[in-house]
Image 1: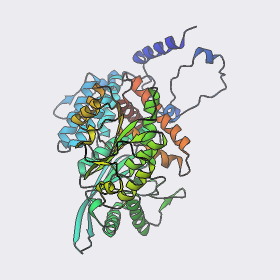
Image 2: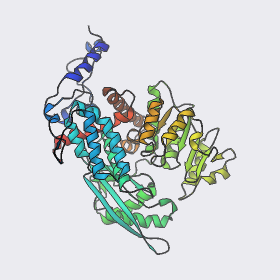
Image 3: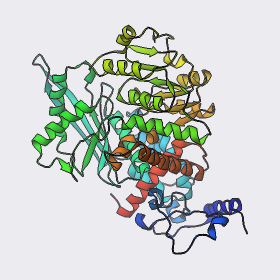
Image 4: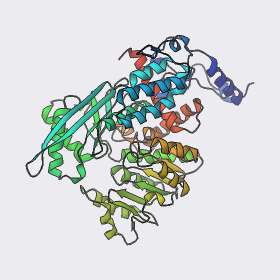
Length: 516
């Protein structure tokens, strides 16, 4: 009898050479190809149905793909002559060039497109039809920009820009974060919305992708100013969001208070403010994003035969996600060492315990408060010593602050100081160049498209989900991502696995829906 190892090898060979039917089956009818060990095969019965998961519903992520010559011969672009491609990498490069032609001024969006298309090139190689879907997917379904006028405490009219980029509704209603911050612009929200397509597709839930926000700095405003701003922001945004249409969630600079103000204004304007008994803009668990980050980190280490217990963890940032990451790390027996904000960073050489974390949280819960105040409450903390937070020796790094915080130089510093893994707790905190350094130097990397799905998991499972159920769902998503990376000859590359898995779910839905 053929061994499992031999069967698996034969199946992989078959995947590279076999063809799928030219028509794509319904998503609901697609199933995974699986290899049953010979010892178990005799015990299984024909009457026993195969247990389906959210991945098995996906159009053969781990199955065969058709090498369609007819699609390879079609022009990918028809501008100044027909433009065709011969290889998957060539298709990816053509798509990046098109993005640069259209949106050369949006550097963050171009970075996202370039990184993603490099991951997807093996798909274009196996089935060229997906390159045409990717071309379609690069353009958002709707880009909304509007002015947000509001009165400050002195009675002066202030003006900010508001955004909502509804990128894809192929899998379901739009869902994604709102971000408030002076760094927010059209390129930022477009880039994050593009990444959100793959993040939400990866989960397997019926969720589309959207991201929005405003260029207001919420940290130097009073509570009454933030309330007036949120009311003005929602007065315009209400035209485009709602239950079963678009669900904004917390993001950078947007916490429970901001969501509360936004919901209050929404229900003043709309008579329908709930769906399925759940209020619109309800917050299932504010700590869910941070809890998800730590559970994904635990899966990554467990997969390597290691654990979080005793690991010295560098946390960059001090917002709600950073603090919930620290609290969950303590539950796993890890040792949080640092927090940071615009004033600098605090470093506790012996670790931050629950008491110190509570003290720090009380400070940061006050709008606009800076970490420097923590020094008064702690006799052991070091403030801005050493001068760079990345110079502190650690086992794991959790960047939970600004975008592009971890550069190539920072990645090298972390590797030099003994760090073994970087797990993103913030959106796009690691630059594309830094990702290459991490891979080159052998550090594990958890991309935000994978690790920041805690809020989606919490919303899908409901408000009464247990930590065990949450962890099981995280484990399922991690296994799917890992298996996809392995399927495409990139063992351990979670960035590629997350993008490919998310893309295939969205792309197959788009193929079923036609030119939308």
